[in-house]
Length: 364
Image 1 (cartoon, rainbow, N blue to C red):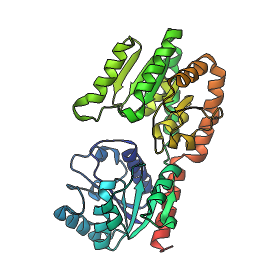
Image 2: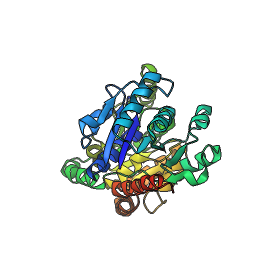
Image 3: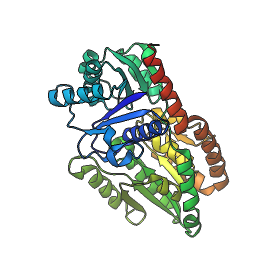
Image 4: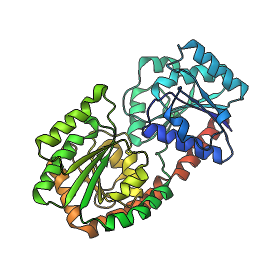
């Protein structure tokens, strides 16, 4: 199959990592993979298996950017593209325009819970399939009634399980040499990710024991860095500057996660929870809030611990209990790794996506 992936993102996030994994894996499986990116996109460095000649860089805002839309449609026709696949909402109208001009089938992936706009209702009538990355996202799509229910398909995000398992082995010696425990979270710095709840829970844990440090990994995408400043003020105000470290952006999270003794996801809303799956694959016990995506991934007291959203005391209690009972943490992490291999592997995601492509080409 000849597939054109479209993504105008200027920063790397869960959706962008998903696209890179998908494109690379499909290329390795022999498909003709083409990718349209914005100039200087960070995704360019991630597409190791996609031939450079198959990557086009152009300014993308939407289908009203006539020059870019026409150039991309011409690129698709010249390469006999069969499927146009877009991953970011602002790219959907552009992808719809290109698919019509090139005579290709349109596939979209929806990574978020936010409602779609009126322009999408007008421009996406010819969409062959919409892939939802979680049941929560699929339910949101059905409620909006933009797409026929039989065109909405659930395919959970998948990860390269072996890469995270290898990261665990590499970090084993470093963890053994340290007498201090480490509790960490990963996610861009924003109120919706729950860093403030994490910090307040850390304050409770630190008041009870002095052998635990905390790490917040992720970059601040807010204008002027206001989110990081708010977090730093809270840390200072609680007297935790020596116990909580802000690591910023992490290039290889597979190396970071195994250095944690416990992973925490305090998000107030999460369409899927990719970092939760990555932590589970890394053999790290997980404590997570009951966000939409987390409830699809974690079974309470079987593969992790679930706590109510925004309940700082419950979060602190769960952290403290798992740090004190390492056998319980080991039990949860063993169960969690098995579930990741069964339900959230990259191989499964690729096979299910290939099946969707085959269906749209056969007009099923």
